[in-house]
Length: 457
Image 1 (cartoon, rainbow, N blue to C red):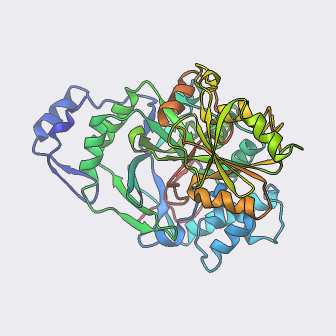
Image 2 (tube, rainbow, N blue to C red):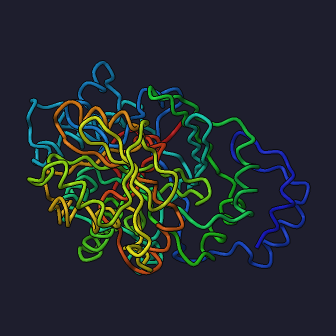
């Protein structure tokens, strides 16, 4: 492997190094250090992305964080917003079923229109891209790449959530209609100092894209075109035991289904053997709490409910909103009063899934006391991302919409990886990652490209 501590040269805007150690690089190439590794874990690809100066017009929140009305409002006056592709029902009559053929056809039409208009352009060569997200004091930098579907199928790219067939089917139809993967899968790996050093060197150059979204999150993109650096990144990741899906289980499962079907059909090329990802080191990931709100007390009075809660938790009233300070601690808001709950130690099992705070709350309170055994389908419970803060919980209860709220300590990356390594799955709504990846900044077009202007200037 290349000794990254020798990367002391300057980096050009084009993503190429000027190495003081060029002879060593040439020697490594001569002995096959950068030989073709066949079907690697990840690879570079020809990204489809906004033309110069168009990124701010195109960038949009992920398709699944907005409902149709919110997406329609966000896209008003923004004809090139990627929401016209990711949520094309906004260009049809209000109330249109988002899973009808008309919606997928409209997305394809909008996608091809943006290509033909030169708003989205295709890079001429296969590249990696470095994608930096900055939210307040938090910064994380990932590598945009396409990952091997076969390695996903073998669980080398590990999962931690169940998927729903209906949501998988929606993403399959979206990929097929566009002939492209436009929503990146959020992936993480156990951080490596070598990769950190390389990314730090590459991002000393000016980014080719630098925008700040209306939520205040800054998005920067660098393009890595140098073949030697691409080979180094490819080989380094290919030597890894595994990577982990943080968010995007339905998108990755859909990509696998598309690949299987296209193999059966004898489709040309092999681009469908890979799926779009942004890959971050685990020590840069930012997981927030994923909290719960409940509509009723399951027919119990407040007094009886609290008595039942005390069977598994120490319960203390709090004069302040409760933001848990560690695992096994929970906040509870009921009738204008906050409570601090601490799980009894003998209730914590030695199991990577059952010991998660979301499991402890479900198994010791939400199911046995409130009678909610299937939080995926039960309409009495809802989930609130930690980005909304404790005020978001109070508002849901004080408005009368909900009766009860719980605040949780965030699931850790170590816990996520332990569950995935064990081949297990987490309960629903266990992790909330921030900041979110933007849609539209880099897409992966599959073989059989749409007609239109496809090559970047």
